[in-house]
Length: 297
Image (cartoon, rainbow, N blue to C red; front, top):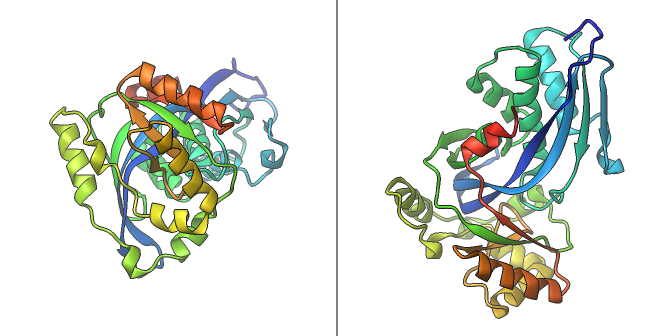
């Protein structure tokens, strides 16, 4: 819309993600690392309110993020440049719930949601493949979050293969009160820290066969280095295990940790005990690709 008329605003959910598996396979010639991962969107989400037309405006309820370099603003600018339409305008407000620097893809999901929603509301007709290409310029997780749901991730994050929905899980999710630098985590890797794709392939095989996820294969090769460099994260992982979590896995480059459950009662019980320890914890669940797409319509 470019005639100054503001369309009826919509709310769009920008879901966080976790890595069910994450293996760093080695360093590429361009300096990035080769990854093998299974990602899953979860119910913890940010919310965008988008109205196309009128004056171009962006706001966020976290003052430090209400800036011109926010990924949402950059996503809108990429779309305008892609179709050579600098006149396209949108009023966008962003409500944050996903913690920043948590390994949960919050900013990347905001950007992906903006790309998909503005593409539809501005009636640009760009294909998902073109949106993925734009998303890759905004972050390694962003191409996956164009789709959401369950997916295999390879390359440095730009190769996305949607998978059938994994079994639905409840999750106890904890964000330690420490910020972890993703570049620092990857920069500290040595060849001894590299892994292989065996766990990723085992999880994918279970998903394709519609079998329960093999919890023992939910692993993250970045976790060891983060636990070593940030003792607070290691302490919280130990606390969750001591409180009865059957398994605790780090998401992405951390520091967020999740414990998967098939029973709400068990998940809620752990969350209650974790809150008793004053941990920064959420009770959430997995979200399918169809649910992600529906939340942007």
